[in-house]
Image (cartoon, rainbow, N blue to C red; front, side, top):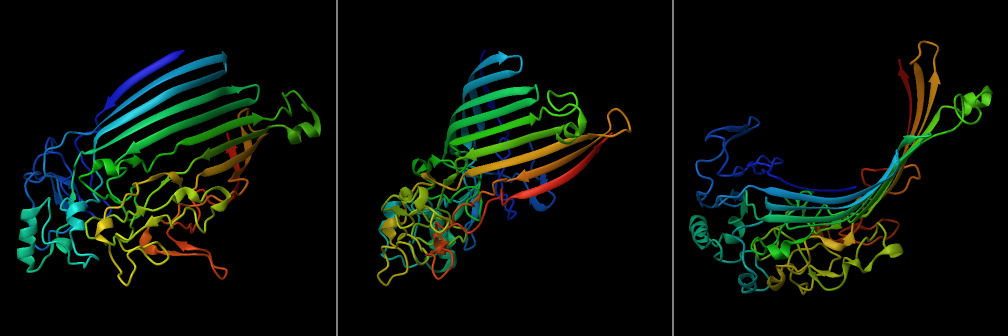
Length: 452
């Protein structure tokens, strides 16, 4: 059997807001049907939409980290398509393989940009090293720069002219995948469902915010979308899951040991499991401290690549050092100790010629720890002489049965620096892993369930 489908979804006109700190910004599109003054959230005393979402924001010495949506936006939409071939082997068993894809258009851009940033050329023209006073103007916001300087009484572009984008539907995504499934429905005491996915997800913005332990890495150049495009934060290229259920063929009504004490002891048992093995998500450089430490007036901490961060792999990789953190030069920002900073010649910060790092937003060849997890469940039914349907079920559930270490992702903030393992202490900082993921250690759970 061959199936194919295509669909297009419009999620609506509502934008996104920084719910974490209560700054919604201009987060409705001009085409929204809500009237002026509509209360969006009782917990946030903000009336929206504003009188004019494209109106200029007032510029004064307090303009820094305001949000602006300077033009009408098209609504986001997502296209989805698939082509699947399915084969039925018998009345209980099928297998299928298919191509599944999707494309997101006019997706909301990450907030963590500065609309009034510098260009690579204007940054490189500054004094080197950067003096933390910086430029007197902005190539993209010259009038606003002049106003903020006049209101502040000093060159205030670096400190006080950081304007984040509100709703800007500039981002896009593309997803391609090969998906296979084997399904044997429960019969003769056995069932199994297995799924395999081989995929790639690419975008230039994976979340509405970056840093502060959010999904996305910080944005770098708002005006160079090509440089922001990389594998997505949610890209998992390989994933396999198998979930069998086996009812042991012992006990009353079964093939073997259907009478006697042995049948009563061994009968009624079911074994089920879920085994998952998956590649990890891509590693990205972020800044959970918001160091804002570069001459370009951008929030990122991206490095200049001077080697291959993926050169440490396989058995050479450990929680003490998950990637080659010496393959990146952080001279354009303010890294902590232990990382490469080619500007270190008595100067703390920063090489203005390296303010725009060439490292990708997320590294396709450097992956965070994946998943290798086995959950197992044993169950046994005991019939009770209190009705035809009354039974007591004992269950023993084992989560992460082999007790595999399921590591969290390595630290991606270069402001932490890097401190190698020494004197019995584990390594810490950029590229090191300090804990485990949500899968955790082995957990055993016992239970009794009464059905009547």
